[in-house]
Length: 481
Image (cartoon, rainbow, N blue to C red; front, side):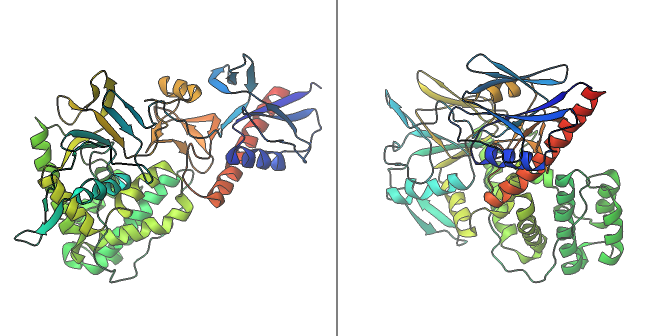
């Protein structure tokens, strides 16, 4: 009987790599029966990685710079010239940096990573400044660059904040993936105790979570605001439970049961409000944005829209389970982790005063000899500035990706990113490719895919290890046959 060897390559020997190697070794079958499992750990400066379980662990003090495939075998190319063959590969390296993410000043140009601890005093007054990101980090920039420079807010006729410039503010041109800031947190307390209901995910945890969120939203709508529905919760709930999330039956049920469009939950529309929208110029987009902010402030202050609060509570309930999933974290940040009503109203005041101008969704920001230029699908033309402030997560996508292995996967459509994180299927951590399919032999975990704490990492590592071992065991069976 021939001897079959199953090989696993783990790229990265930090906390994520160490955890998954430990779980792989603990779960691997004992050597024997003509079958062996080898784990190859690739890291320029790894710790001593020894296995007490009898699994062969090989450490390569090198850097992985490429990942390709041939006849189902995974080929990991190392900087030193060697190529490792594997039945499965786990990406557990740290998040890649970007060559232009350091503070840089030359010829009057300035590039700031943003975030706490960074000095904003050098941001020029009265000049255009590009800001990439419209979430929490962007909100934190506003006070030091406006009221911190001598501006102040007064009250308008309807009590709204009106900004009076101090004369030393920059002119902020703000773009982000979705093109709009996070929604404000509701300004009222919940009236009821409607909670989410758990649904089995059967391999698609995101789909099940989306249904749980919708369940909490509609339960609050039907029980707290029955006059805005055409049927009762007792009649709606069983049909909702049976329906496929997002399917035709679900859409038809909601349409006939909830007459007002504003009362229906559309997670996709919430996540990408500017998708498919085009404006003739920046002025047209600003009018739309002022309406967006005004509507957000009105809705988040009105208990008549308490289903929004029920949705937020359901997001918080689901977070321990979904922490680190890019789709979920993106939705959580947008809907549940936004500014207070007061700060959102001040942002609206800054926009009306012309201090903040929104440039739309998916901006492409490039550098030339004159500074930075931003363009995008929402409005035509370019926005130019000599200062760029980063107010977003460090990207792991193809633009500016400093990791050549990841850059190659993105360029070939063999991986994709969501909310700046490598997209994987949960709980097993398999890579999702550019067309939405799942790769059987490639896995990822750690900071590439998640922002959770150590407990989350341990859960992910255990799930990934089980999936990797299952895949390698299947490969060993085929090899023996």
